[in-house]
Image 1: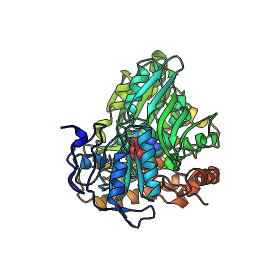
Image 2: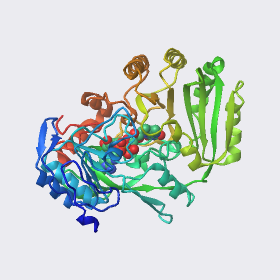
Image 3: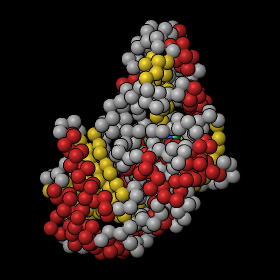
Length: 491
Ligand code: FAD
């Protein structure tokens, strides 16, 4: 029997195998209860949904369909949401069709690439998920030093294909994070002090805007959109492909971790702070205060991407400071460093995180961080992204990304395997952050929990906010793309 003849038999039971790029014909779909953009109830006519499915190359999944449950899940297990429809897009044409359907029906819409949203914004209850998971692929042009990355691709693929040519760009610190979500809101990573944010390395985006238009955004084409997509998140459309600039780099770095017992943590953290500020741009040092087998500990994650002999020399004072309890820094393939922590944050973990930009790490700040960690056993980790260097070389208005003057991003995060006592644990995290937040100014929207509001965005984007509002009014006046660090179309 041909797949296309294999008909669904009811509104909630279409027995076809998903994820193949074949669209089974949906038939006899009754009205579908859904949620509108402003959160109200909506009944989508069955025939309208059938037409939508017929116009897609990928599958349209409804509750009850084979594959729906697997597809609706996102990395953060806190968000067990049930969309009315999941459009499994196989390319830009499907994305365009999905955007038009969402717009015409004023349907609540989420966009999902890697699914790593900490705040659960890439899924929704009762709306449409524009799912890009099938759109994965990276093509490297070594001569031009460019990587063309389909929007559903994960960072591990970008790193792997680039380093195979002795090239690389900034791409997070976990290999299974999505390139698109990370890049659109900035993108910190182990190479960022050398090459800048992931978004600083984008040469062009392909995007489907809210009116269903294909657009290219680069220096030459739609430069206003190009500006907004570099730091303004998913506000302006669905990005279908990203072209990154790549840089020559030895694919083997000096990488690893150095840790100290709690009795030495204060001195080690101060020593870290003293060397981090003026560190060469080829080194990234991520400090972390965390619990290990019931005991608090301090450690520094190391990635040196320059000359190895120089790196050994520069890192020696850190590695010989005090008496480290763990001290392993060695030549390691960059792709191995990038995936070494993946298992610590598996899909489905229930996670909560908060963060803020830090101008400096003072002695008092270090004391407070240590004090908060020691009093909060439900908190897994307080860490900093190491900034400065190339992150700060761009002017504040060169892209939409809000802050360039920060030295660190201070973040707290936890991930719990079960829901046991979760409300109490989250309350403890919030309390911990209330104590730490005064150290910070503004926040990185990609690391934050679900509790950001628009007024927070205004302060966070600072002088870039009004320009973002004008862009939003131009490219998405109905605020179709609102499940993100949302900028309203009117100030
Ligand atoms: P998704 O959940 O798929 O998308 C998140 C949001 O991005 C969506 O809600 C949507 O608004 C937008 N979006 C995604 N794709 C598109 C698209 N194609 N078009 C338009 N909008 C889109 N961040 C860093 O900077 N550096 C790190 O090292 C880092 N490490 C992380 C490690 C873990 C374990 C996790 C969970 C997160 C980490 N992050 C890091 C944060 C990460 O950048 C964000 O969670 C980011 O949103 C993930 O992108 P995604 O495509 O996987 O997410």
